[in-house]
Amino acid sequence: MSETIFTKIIKKEIPADILFEDDRVLAFNDINPQAPIHFLVIPKKPIATTNDIQQEDDALVGYMHRVAAKVASDLGAAESGFRTVMNCNKHGGQTVYHIHLHVLAGKALGWPPYQEKLKVE
Ligand code: AMP
Image (cartoon, rainbow, N blue to C red; front, side):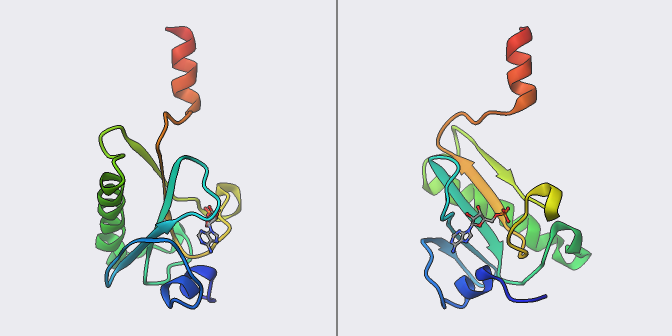
């Protein structure tokens, strides 16, 4: 896998607003936030896309979600709630080919089925 901007962030070659770090993962604020709270959780192990996750990565990917919840809690957004998204490839809107969990929070987020449901009830 070729190096991405996230590898540079892991290696501290470029700065990021880091919220959590340990030997397995890094969480940092998204540079182009789509919600009042928008951070990314990435594994230090480079995995290009969701399609490339192997069985040996199951625990790591689960851990990314647990870190997402921990950081959301640190930011006061666990109880009110948040959304996790992992975009995959072109149709998924992926632009950085090192898997990352988007964590969006800080307001009620739109979701088409929910909005549709609100209309009919
Ligand atoms: P995706 O489009 O799902 O691949 O998401 C990539 C995300 O990385 C986007 O939301 C970008 O705003 C974010 N991003 C790109 N470069 C940086 C950076 N240097 N620091 C923080 N976030 C970044």
